[in-house]
Image (cartoon, rainbow, N blue to C red; front, side):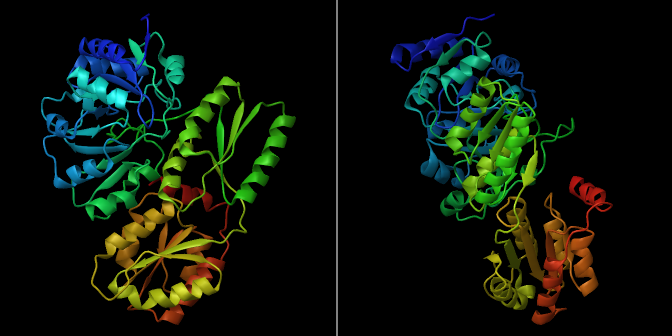
Length: 477
C-alpha cells in the first residue's frame, strides 16, 4: 500500500506534488467544483493508474486540466472561436469544453474517444501546480468510482488513502458539483453533456447559439457495453451513498408532508433515517457523506425547486445518487405547460396560451413569436427537453399538420407525444398512452377546435394497470 502524502498549498509542497506527477504518480488537487485526481494527461500508464485507483471503467473519459488558455492548443486539434470566447468568459471556472483531440493525447486519457474534455480550474494553488507540472493534467473526481464526489481533502483521504501518492490539502470546494461539460465539436450547435454551474443561458449569451441538452441526460445511465459515453456520468452509476436514497419531487409543503410521513414509518420500523431538505449544490455531496458517516439506513431527500437550469444541474446529481428512485407528491400545485410552434401552427398558439392561463395553468411560451419560417424539429425538441428536464409538467407543440413537430418531440427520451385530431384521440392520448405532450395542426384545426381537444386531454385521468407496462416499454425505447 502506498503512503499518501498530505501536502499544503505552499510553494515547496506544490513543487513536490509536481515532481510526483511528472514521475508518473497520482496527486489529488482542489478546484472550485470538486477535488480532482491528477495524472500526466500525456502518460497512458498514469491514466491507467488513475482508473485503477478509483476503480473506474476505462471507457469513462477523463477531463484534462490546463493552466493557461493557450494550452488548449496542446491538447485540442481544433479550437473554434466559440471556444476562445467561452474561455474568456468562464475560465478559470467550472466549464469543460469537448473538442477534437490531438493525436499525441493517448486514448487511455480520453476513454478511447477522438475528443478531449478540457477545462481550466479556478484555484490559484492548482493552477500553479499544473504550471509546475509542465504538462496538461487529467483529473477525474478524486473519489472511489460511483461514490459521492469529494468536496474536501478529508473526503479524498477517506476514499483514496493508500491508493494515491499525495493530496494537496486546499480549501473546501465552493461550487460543490462538477463542471458543466459542453460539446463543441459542432460549434454552431453546442450541447451540454453534463449540466453544472455554467448554464445554457450563460453559454448562449456568449456564443449567440441556442444550447441544447444531450438526450443521454434524460435517460438512466446505460451500462450497455456498446454504449460509448461522451462525458463522465453518462454510462455508470454516480454519486451513490451507501444507504438507499429516495428523492421527493413537488411543492415544498407537499414534499415536507410526504417526508414527515415516510420518516415516521421508517423510524417505527427501526431504521436510522437521514433527511436532506432542498440542498444547495455546494452542500449536497457533503450531506451524502455525512449520511454515510452516521450509518444511515435510508436517505430521504427533497428535490430542488424546478424551473431553473441550476436546479436541473443539482437534480441531475440527486437523481443519480438516488438511483432514479423518485416519488412525485402533491397535485394541488399549479401545473406548468410549455408550448412551442413553427409558422404553420402559429395561428393556434396565442389562443391556446390565453385559454390555458385563464384556466389557471402556468404557461411558458417557447416561441415562435411571429410568422417567420422556422424548422419545426428545433421547436419540437426544445419543448420536449423542457418537459423532460422538469421545467414543465406537460408540453404542447404546433405545426401545419402536427405530424412533423410531434415526431421531433418523440425523439427525446422520456417523451410520449400524441397528435390530437378528434376528441376520442385526445381522450385516449392521456387515458391509455399517458401522453405528456401533444401536437396539433394549424392547417387542420381552428383555434376553438384545438382548445377543445387540449381541454379533453388535460381533463382525462390516466388509466393505470394494464397500460402501465405499455407506457414503461415506450419509455425504454
